[in-house]
Picture 1: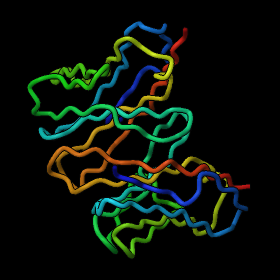
Picture 2 (picture 1 turned 180 degrees about the vertical axis):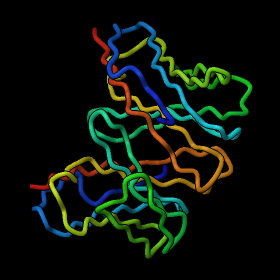
Picture 3 (picture 1 turned 60 degrees about the vertical axis):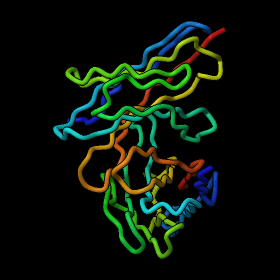
Picture 4 (picture 1 turned 135 degrees about the vertical axis):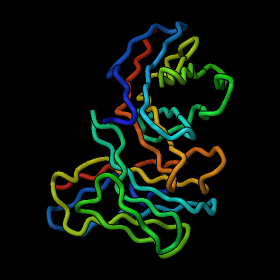
Length: 114
Length: 115
C-alpha cells in the first residue's frame, strides 16, 4: 500500500514563528502536492513538485514556500506564521501523468496559529 | 469560473437508501479525469472512484457508481444502500490533460446517514 506520512497530526504555533510541515511518501512518486482545506472552500492547492528540486506555485502560494531535496520528502514552510494560516494541511503524492492514477493523501496536519 | 461545482453543502439520507451527490465540471480539455474522495471526521482522504473522459461506460466500485453525463459536464456519485459509516465529507475532483496534472477539488458535500 502507498503510504504518505505527515509529521504531525496537530500543531500549535505562535504568530511570527517559522513553521515546517513535513511529508514523506514511500512509493517513489514523482509528483507531490500541498493542499490547504478550509470549511466551505474545499481543498486549495498551495504548491506542487514534479521532481526533486522542482516546484510550482498552485492557486494560493502567498505566505508559503516549499522544499524538495529528496524525491520522497516534500516540505511546506510558513516563513512567518499568521493567524489566517490556521487550517488543515494535506499532502498528497501520485505517479506521473499519462495513465489513470489517483492521488494518495497523508492524514493531514491541523495547524493552529495563535 | 469554478472548475468543479458541488451545489449541495449537505445531504441527509436514511440507512439502506440510495443517495446521489452532484458534481459539475468545467474544462475545454478533451482529456480529463474525474475523481471522488471521501473524508471521514478523522481527516484522511479516501479515494472512491475514477472516470476518464474517454471511458464509454460509467465507473462502478462496489456500492459506488459514477453517473457520467459528458454533454452536461456532470459526474454525480451514487451511493447505493447507504450505511452509517458513509457519513463523511465527499469531494469531487478533476485532473485535466495538460500540464503536470494537478487535482482541482470542489467545495465538498457533507453526507449524514441516519439509522
